[in-house]
Every structure is written in structure tokens, then in C-alpha cells.
Length: 149
Image (cartoon, rainbow, N blue to C red; front, side, top):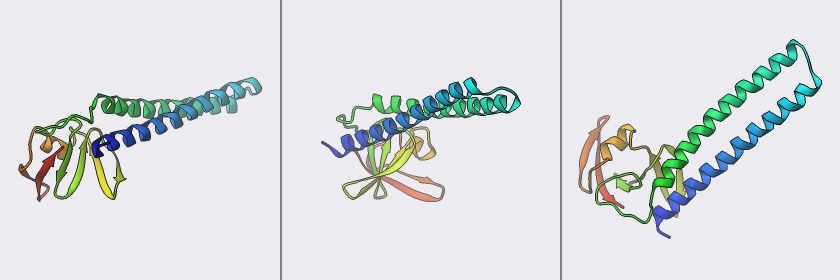
């Protein structure tokens, strides 16, 4: 399995784990609300129920964001190599490995640190459509694309 395939798989697993956690939290709140509804009445009950609904909405919003990130990863074919930086490219620039996908926490695989970034991010948008050897300046720092995988 190539490094890019390993990266994609690890990020998909990471997002699936988060999806599972959020779904568990949401269903836990739903169960709590149903149990609470059976035994309570009055202002305290209404406030508690309202707080649970707000929390559930927040969790649903976060879950939606994670599902959108997973949908982006699902579009990537890690076996494909690119001449120019595109969605799914693994870019080596200034000694860093950048995975053009969606903004996610950094990973370590085989003693290599990988940074996942969105094509819409400031750095991602500078990289998009360019190939090895391309240099650019960002925030006073010079970047050079060493290779595109």
C-alpha cells in the first residue's frame, strides 16, 4: 500500500471514529430526553429539555461537518498520481508532506508527518494547479514544491 493510500485510509478511519462518537452522543441525548420526559414536569424540566436540544443541535452540526469532510475523502482515488497539484495530491514542499484534501489534524506514518489541508486554504490555494519546481511566497516565507505524488 502506497504512503498516499495509507494516509487516506488513516484519515477515513479517523473521521469514521468521530462520526461514531457523535452519533453515540446524539443518541445518548435522545434517550436522556425521553427518560427525562417520563419523570419530570415544570420549569426545571423545560430548561433541561431545552439545554439537551441545544446540545443535540451542536452535535448534529459537528456531525454534518465531519460527514462533509468524509465525502471529500471518499472522492479521492489514492492510487492516482498527479503531475499538477489537485484534490488528493500528496505534495512535498519545503521538506513537509501536504495532503490536499480537507483540513484535518496532522498524522505520523513511517516517521513522516503529514499535514492535511483544504484546497481552499491559503496554502492549498497557492499549491493547486502547480507542479514540482514551482516556488511562491506566502506570509514572507518562500515555498518550493519539490514533488507531487
